[in-house]
Length: 114
Length: 113
Image (cartoon, rainbow over the protein chains, first blue to last red):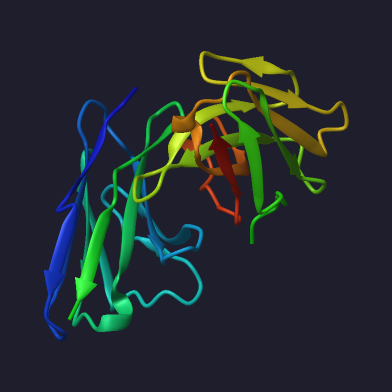
């Protein structure tokens, strides 16, 4: 199946710093990518929908200035957690959609904010 | 909000069939039923999807009721590696207008020796 790569897989940062997570579709072009957050023992929560070349659409309750999403090319979307705090510690997962509507997920990025 | 309901947990003996139910009574005519699973600390893995006909692939079978208000995912011979959280999701599909996946709570399947 198609491959979606996330980097880094794990990151630890200090409170107040910003962290960037990359999501790449390695063998297909993705016009749409989705970003999810998952807390321990909970389900995935959709944060935003990212379309190449346009502004991301955020779900209700997700702060767009806190979670900056950039989808600059058909194979790359980035999520930047700005001024991270311990409550932002979570598992962040992206998915990428092909032209035929199939969705593939990355392996996730675990963020720990100290 | 998720449009599906699933039992929170199920057990299955290794080598036996695992039958995971899902209710989606408010499904729309253009929505497909998708199944994904998530093994601990990994990204979700696609299993199968269908609209109204039963579907089978190398991983599983999907049985959708005639009224499309419920479905069952069948893992024919469960192994220990099938232990995971299984998510049933309804989604508009097709082309680049495919809809987003909204995850419910899923079913935590434990396959036991």
